[in-house]
Length: 245
Image (cartoon, rainbow, N blue to C red; front, side, top):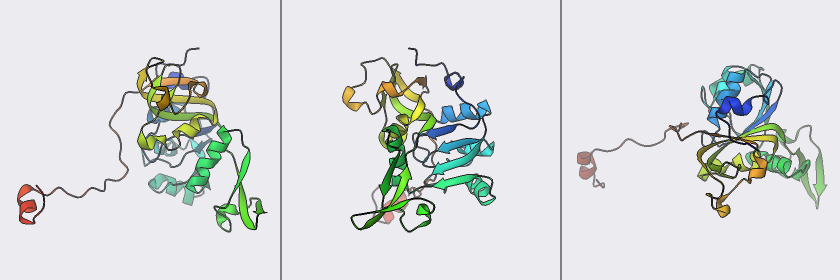
């Protein structure tokens, strides 16, 4: 079975359509499947429900789909870096289902494991629990959360082989591995594409059985949400202040 496709548009061909539910991996702008997101934008598919920890930033990542009004609902945890997201939400143009971050992660993991629902203490007594079943166990109250399962999961991996085995690097392991298991079809973009057997089995985070399509996207300039570094001191001022040069 051929899994490697020439580009993102080819990988999405015949699968993307209006009204779908998409999962989109990554954490902030780290480990996001940006090439696949761009292909979704170019497809013109609308009324999408997107499950993602965050909504990118303006004009980057999922921010591109918000700019084109292709997203009608977001199921997310943190969205504070996107002004267009905030504008659409406050104007009533975008439906939002907010989740505590750990709850969102567990909802995705549960969906991938075939678990339809679970109970958690997180959110009990808050707006998070409104409209949901609350049950008592051993004298404590827990709110029921549903597992999440998507039509398509878009993920980004550091390395992948042509059979779909994937390895993620550092922060990109947030959400990508669990999302890869929780969709009818998982499409991966990988920075380094290798042949089967070239990835140490002990370093494989997603087994190829979960991945249906792959594209090779060599590493490009990485976007940063907010730069928080301080200005570099010159040698003279550092020496005068007793600092290291």
